[in-house]
Amino acid sequence: MLHPFHTSVTDIPLPEKFTYPFCYTPHPLCIAAVKEVQDYLGRQDRWKEELAQGKMFGVLVVETDKGEIRYLAAFSGILAGKNVHPFFVPPVYDLLQPQGFFKTEEEQISQINVRIRQLEEDEAYRRRIEQLTALQQTARTSLEEARLQMKAAKERREERRRQAALSPDCRITPEEESTLIRESQFQKAEYKRMERAWKERIAPLQQTVSTHEAGIQALKAERKVRSAALQQKLFGQFKMLNHLGEVKTLCDIFEQTVHKTPPAGTGECAAPKLLQQAYLHGWKPIAMAEFWWGESPKTEIRHHGHYYPACKGKCEPILRHMLQGLEVDENPMLKELQSNKKELEIIYEDEWLAVVNKPAGMLSVPGKEDAASVYSVVRERYPDADGPLIVHRLDMATSGLLVVAKTKQVHQNLQAQFKNRSVQKRYIALLQGMVSQDTGTVELPLCPNPLDRPRQMVHAEYGKPAVTDFEVLKRGDNRTRIAFYPRTGRTHQLRVHAAHPLGLHCPIIGDELYGKKAERLYLHAETLEFTHPITGKQVRISRKADF
Image (tube, one colour):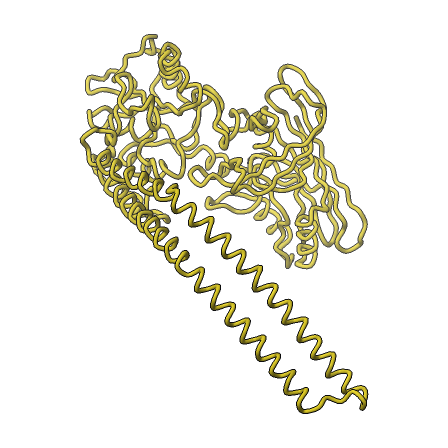
């Protein structure tokens, strides 16, 4: 599993520090290692079909105790039903051991699933469900008819009393009033008797069904308890090392996080596997990279052969522990933020609002890092403004027009316009690839990826509606210049709609989340049109993209 480079890498200098795993440009040593791994994958015909469906792989360049530069390779999860293959590092813990506790307990849980399925599909139970449903419907119909008859009888009695009140000749005698009262009492009592009769008919069948369903729920409760216990026991077997020789289980590591418990599949990604093997053998980690091989998943956006950072949900807490003792590169995004100048071009301004041109790489509002943002710059420029200032946001990597409110009243008015979608927006982007349609609409529901923020994912069940109209402006050199007109304002909407296979399938150039990194993200908010909150006039502001 420790591989020598087949091509010479002696002329490639070693990096000064280890790769920052959540945002990086692959080191040339990693690129050389990845090429060899990809050549190996291309020769594996037995995995061809599975690999085509897509999988994440990783490489770790290490220095041995003899000073040799070698590399390790790993895959995330399971490959061809196994998690042990000769070319790749083994898992931190082999949960697929035939005699191991995981497989044994998993078999017990599988038997519970079989029993649940048998109970749910039992023919006698299904017949009783059908009988109960039919009987309950008949009861509802019968009682509804009785209620309508009672209502009609009551209306007749009330009409008789109204006539008596209007005409002395139609007075109600005491005997007639007594008859009317007895009729009402009899009908109410009869309805109660009918209700009881139906309940008595339904009860035995309902009891039989409920007893059967209680058995199903008891098994499901047992399954839940056993699954949770199994997960906890499993996570306790993942004893993660770091460069200092310290050991922590996944339970220990995630106890310090907000969620307290690791997500399913934690510890089985490529990055932790690679570092674990290096530490076990005393090899010094030099640089690391992960890449996607195969087709993109339906919900996430992955491109064949592209490099990707480690995931945030599963890997970030683990790597925070495993990298202790190593000199690690600084977050390049933090460097970019801290190097931002506090200059901001004002495109339009009056006493109530301003429109600024946000440069690519500047935050709209302050983040955790101490870096310039549109908010901090305009707060300094307008110290007497009593409003929240920032009306809407652009991604840090996106350039273009932002509206700034100088008063609370103006802020509320403008936010309402954005919320009810009366603000017209036009974005310009350069896409990698050729969009065949001249115009069209992309509708893909979006939601955050809980295991890899800030990425968004397309999800039919959990996603919120996201709609983008587009117009192709120019094509050439396998690039498309395009205008976007978003009808909704979801996070990363234009970026996902451009890159996703069910969208335009052409990522925005420079989109390192959904495409490939470049010198910048080629997305610019070019035009805004809104109603001035004070004058009531239409305001249309444009600022051409500088690309």
